[in-house]
Structure formats: C-alpha cells, structure tokens
Image 1 (cartoon, rainbow, N blue to C red):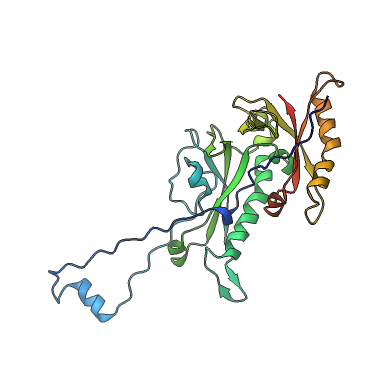
Image 2 (image 1 turned 90 degrees about the vertical axis):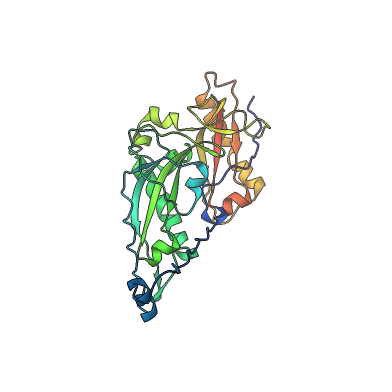
Length: 285
C-alpha cells in the first residue's frame, strides 16, 4: 500500500539573509617614537598628503576550484586561494559577473540588500545551464549555488565583481568532495544519480536525514511537484497536490505496480517565503 504522504521541513536553498557574519577588527600599529622630523613618512603625514589607495584585487577566474568548508561556503565573502581542479576540492567557480551597485545615481554599498539580492538571483539562475540540465533535475540533486562578493574594503578600493560557485552538500553541515569539473554534470545520467538527493529513512520519520546519493541511503527523491500559485496555498492544499503525481512516481519506480511505497514532502509557509515553491516525491531505493 502507498505510504501516507507526510510533510517534513527541508533545508532551504542558501539565503544570505539567514547567514550570520562576523566582522574582524584590524589592529592599529603605533608609530615609531624614534622617527625624526626629517623622516619622509612623518613629513607626508604632517603635510596632510592622502594615503595611497590600495589596488583592488583582481576578479576571480571562472573555472577555478577551491577547498571550502561548509561555513566558508555560506559566507558572503571569501579569501580562499584556488587549488588545481584535478585535486580534491569542494567548490568550482562557474560564473563571474559585474555588480550593478548604482541606483538612481547613488552608489550603494556592496553589503546593501539591493546588491546582495541581485547576486542571490543571478547565481542560482545560471547554474542549470552550466550543469547542462533543467531546474527540475537540479532540484533533485544536492548540488547548490553559492556566491561571493568583495569585502567592503575591497569594494571601496574599486572591486565590483561577484562570483558564483557550485557545491555539493553531503549532508547537513558538510560538503561533498568534487573530483572532476562540474560543467555538464546533469547531462550525464550516472553523474547526476551520484549527486542526487537521497535520505537515510522514509520522509516524515525520525530517522530521516537528507544525504547525497553516493552515500549509504534508503530513499531517493525522484520527481518534483511544482506549484504555480502566486501565494502559499496552505498546508492542506499543498499536501493534496502531490498525492497523485507522487503515487504515480512510486508506481513507475516499483517492480510491482500493485505493491509499492512512496512519500511526499510539500513546502511549508516558511519555505515558500524563502523561495521553495515545489514539493518532492520520494521512493525506496
């Protein structure tokens, strides 16, 4: 008999507004007490000459790979250095663009809502094409877009780029290792399956934990249930929408079309507000 459809809160796609960031205070060094009046640095400072403006860092290179931890991948800025993509890594830069930080003739700060929301929209929408698949195929994997901008200091020095990276989530709080370039990954059925979204137990149960499909698992997400509503339809309607398509997906995946199980996750109101406007169909795997 089909398993009853149950809802479970899922981890939403990365949202910069939900990421806490810490600002480090740079220490100031005191001057040399032995500096004389004829010292060039002292003379320049006394004369009021402006300090030299540092050169902005060069924009990142598309195709570069990085070793990032989970928390580093969620941070709005990064100082990590690239590693060879043939070596183990956890992030690959798939797009670099230029920030549009001028609104009505006013220059906005790089950490303003307008600038950050601009990048948060551009990077995810570019990922499916880079991976060679559809948005639905991407939603059935643990592949995600993350993005970075210059620091405030780097922006003040003239840096105006944004960087989009693709990562794979192994499970909550941990990234998976990427072993080869990610371009075109979704077009390859075997690679797409390895990075798929799986779970340790039936959705809605206490042992349910989302994991990448290359790890040990018991269930697999096999279909999405898109919602066209402009506003959240409510939990009852959201629950009802997925019963038929998920039952059909379970039947199609089963060896015996008369004896099979299936599960369904529908979005909560909170997830809907964060941009997750689709449900997921699950089957034992």
